[in-house]
Length: 213
Ligand SMILES: Nc1ncnc2c1ncn2[C@@H]1O[C@H](COP(=O)(O)OP(=O)(O)OP(=O)(O)O)[C@@H](O)[C@H]1O
Ligand SMILES: Cc1cn([C@H]2C[C@H](O)[C@@H](COP(=O)(O)O)O2)c(=O)[nH]c1=O
Image (cartoon, rainbow, N blue to C red; front, side, top):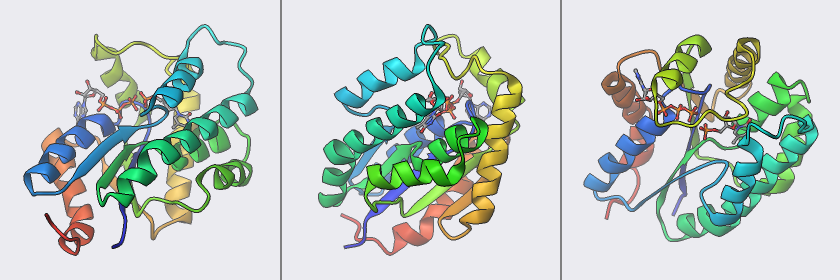
């Protein structure tokens, strides 16, 4: 059976987590066995790496150290959670995956998309998502959304200048052009229900062919 592994990407505050949660409920109601997770994190070791990466006190973190830590968290998460879930026939929904590293570390930090692709190829060992949905948003709007959410803790990446977040978006738009087959864009500035229905429409061709339980 073909794996159903979907990743969700975009600048901070684009609405990925909101839609992944809605999608998880929607797919369960349709009879799918679903595993929703996030990066960096999703399992104990990767959550520990996440807390190092996102700790606002870690101001001196070198960009290459950052890139390697994201790739290390990805590897452990893949081995401990994503691969076993796919082998059990679950639909995997992953809030961020390799394209976050390409856009944030490769493009926005200026480490080079090819270099970051190369260290991540070592980490993922060929396992790419079936489809990646990119949530496109003006980073100003994304950051405003985050600012309104009192429950969310401010992390190290949130503290970057607006120009950094604008480069992240530019990086994603470049990836979209480079990988038109495996990436699709949704307009994440729309109301939540419309973003959700656009995402479901993009996934539908993969879902209708899958074996529903
Ligand atoms: N389409 C939307 N319109 C308006 N507000 C939204 C929309 N989608 C999400 N939000 C709100 O924006 C905030 C950020 O949403 P969410 O956490 O889903 O974004 P995210 O992309 O996962 O962000 P991050 O990558 O920074 O974790 C939340 O308060 C959420 O309720
Ligand atoms: C996977 C991954 C993530 N990031 C950045 C993107 C965000 O700013 C944070 C994660 O926070 P979220 O609330 O879970 O979205 O980390 C990155 O720079 N590189 C990556 O590979």
